Amino acid sequence: MINLYGVTLSKLEKMMLEEGQSKFRAKQLFTWIYEKGCIDFDDMSDISKSFREVLKEKYCLKKPSIFVKQVASDGTIKLLLEMDDKSKVETVLMRYNYGNVICVTSQVGCNMGCSFCASGLLKKQRNLEVSEMVGEILVMNDLLKESNEKITHVVVMGTGEPFDNYDNVIDFIRIINDQKALAIGARHITVSTCGIPDKIIQYGKEGLQVNLAISLHAPNNEIRNRIMKINRAYPLEKLIPAVKEYIDLSGRRVTYEYIMIKGINDSIECAKQLIELIKPTYAYVNLIPYNPVIENGYERAESSAVHAFMDYCIKHGVNTTIRKEFGTDIDAACGQLRAKHERRD
Image 1: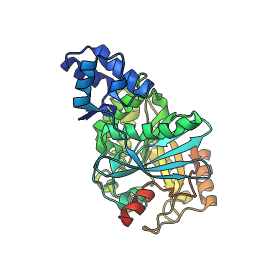
Image 2 (image 1 turned 180 degrees about the vertical axis):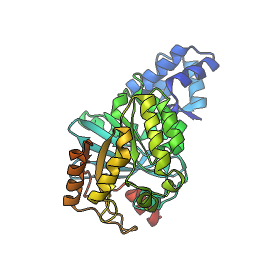
Image 3 (image 1 turned 45 degrees about the horizontal axis):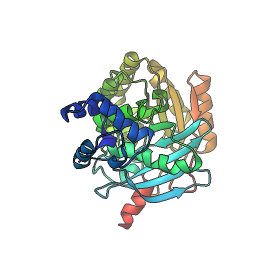
Image 4 (image 1 turned 120 degrees about the vertical axis):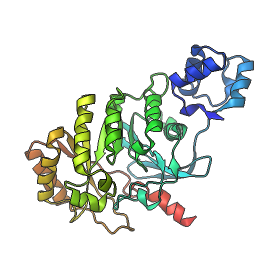
């Protein structure tokens, strides 16, 4: 059966035409599904009973189920969701002063092999379907209804490499951005990639006003090869020109994510090299305090080193911030909660 949570409006219009219905039928369904939150075709009162029977035979509206829920003292909510095939993925709600941000997972496991990351502890099993990614938001929105809240911002920064699941991620973006669906503004959506050059360029041609973040984490190939396996296939000499081409195509600035790891990439010399590296791309830098993962032995950079790094970058004209931390009293690092439960199983 086709899960309608995974179908864009344009694709649904084509499907309805193939069913002998009009394009308007697709808009009706979107209204019932997203505006009214309907999960039962029998409740769709302005659709004929005969076509409701067709819908029940061919289509479904299934969301992931909550396997584990953690709530931090700062209001962060972390869910371990279970899919139909018993696969489990994490999704996290973070509360900022400007809105509710959800971190969406795009794959079950990850093959990128970043040595500092909890997500890579469990290798990729499969890509998530569009409906499953949309489902992450719908399940979180269901929880937020109790407090009359909803998701306002989306970052595709959970487990997996989004551009390794490119087509599904693009359809996911089109659904959540659609005014007839979740109506999350394009500028409120960010996709993060470890750096697949051809997909970065393709993304720049999509005509989307969605943000792009590059998981950089190192200022040179020597360090990046050591902590990010993907750099051996796509070194900085390939990545940075692709980012520049993306900027030229889209007119959008990018953000470089940079996890601060003690004794690895947190020196002022690294800051100097980073500034030189990203100079052609005119971008932001977001420094991320490291959440230690016991399996890999890396340590969080000292707060003084993080602030010195930021101050140096700002002094030399690079807009640099330190990411606010959330959920420090629960399994904070991406992939930790799933890894803990997979090990138990």
